Every structure is written in C-alpha cells, then in structure tokens.
Image (tube, rainbow, N blue to C red; front, side, top):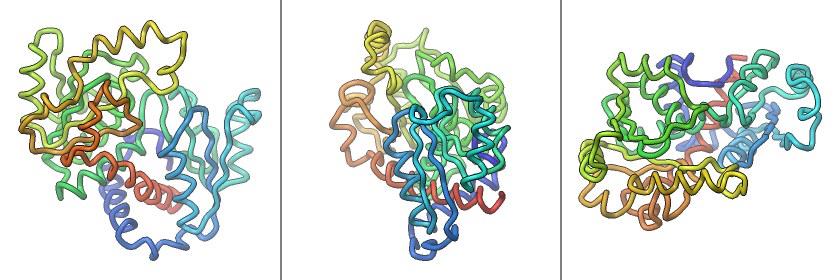
Length: 312
C-alpha cells in the first residue's frame, strides 16, 4: 500500500487515519516505540519545511530512524529511477518523497518494494490533505457536511482536498481563475461532481467581490494557497509569468474586507506570501487555524507512517 494519491484510499482508510492522528496528538507517549526501530528515507527534489520535519521528527518520535537524501547529491539524478528505487527499498522500510512530477511517483511506486508516500508533486499533495482533515475534525467536530471554499489557483493541494472530500463528505467549492496545467484531473473532478461534493464558480462571468463574499458566507472553511509554486517564486526565468499571475489573482486575495463578518475558519497550507494570496493580518486572525494545520502535519504524518507500515 502506497500513498501517491488519495483517489484509491477508501473512506475507512481516510477516517481511521484522521482518528489515529488525533489519538497520536493526544497521547504521544503511547506511540514512542510504535515502529520498533524501522527506517524512513526522505528523498526530496524540492525544498520543504513542514513535510520534511513531519517525516524526520515523526519517525524519530515513533522510535524509528530518518535518513534525508537531497536528490541532487545522489545517483537518482543520473541513473534509472526504477533501479534506484529498488536499491533504496533494500535499505529502508518506508520512503517519503517529494518529486516535481507526478509521473515520477507512478514510476517510483511501481519499482519500490516498500511503501512510498507522496510528500508533494505537481498534481497531488495527499499528506497535506490528511493533515487538513485532522485539523477540520479537531475544530469543527465533523467532516461530513462541511463546506470548504478553495480560493486561488487550482493546484495540487486543491486536488487532494477534492479527493479527500469526496471520500468523507466534504463539499468543496473552487474559485480559481487559474489552473496549474499539471493539476488537471478531469476524472477526479467529474467523480466528485457526480457525488455533489465538488463545484466550480465560473470566474469568467461574475462580479468578483460580491460572488466571493457570497460563497465565503456559506462556507465553514475558507482555504487558500500560494498563487505561484515555491520553486518558481524567485526564479528569474518565471518573473514575467509570476507578475502576470499576481496581477490576475489579486482580486481573489483573502483580506479583512472579504472576510468582514465571516464566522468560519481560515486555512492555508503554508508557506504563505503575505500581501499576495493572503493579507498578513489574516494569517494571524483569530479565525485562522493555519498554524494548527502546520502542527498537525506532524501528527498526521505519524498516522500515515504507521498505517502504511502495518499494511506493508
């Protein structure tokens, strides 16, 4: 069993992982020796704070060992991906990877003989979504029937929220004038729409201010993410596209005006660009549960590791 995307995970898999996450957070001492010295390898092509810390610290707190590999300092960049995954599988018990492209995860998981966790790619971010479900359950006391509005660029995080919501009964409304091309997943979107748990606000024919205010008012959760992927934000070759996108997206910023009178919760998977997708004061607003989200990545990662090792 791998975690490459939440699409093949069952409702039971997801709900039990959320429940385990909450128990691990509440009773951490009970899990101090849960993995019995097993090893986790972190294989990263991209920068990371939360996912890397959650993996390294999580496996350590479970009584195991972490080994971090920067892709650029290994032979993964030079050799056949399948060959290297088979070799790595002989050394460790579970692999947490962060790849640029989803297609590489498919190839890696096919070759690996131990569980592989997708710690982020251009199409999905399942560990983020599971941590988010834990946070929603913790704050709202339920998942089924929750209304979540994702405002911003339709990306990998948005896809995983849709996939998770489809399994546990969260209704996801997407307000996205831009879609990252790599995140297009019509099969997922159509399946969620058929269940009545995914809808898109047509940004081509709306008055942005009034339409956003209306959908926000009806939502239990308002969620946003960076408008430009982290690896491109300071890339000079992406500067022109970055400026175009920022100008296009600015009317969709989460700010005090949009959220005036809102009584729900505000979420962001971090890192945030203050003054772009979210105003700085909103990050620290009393309605924001952003840093609880961040903390919960650790507890949910532990639950993911335990589940996959138990199924290995």
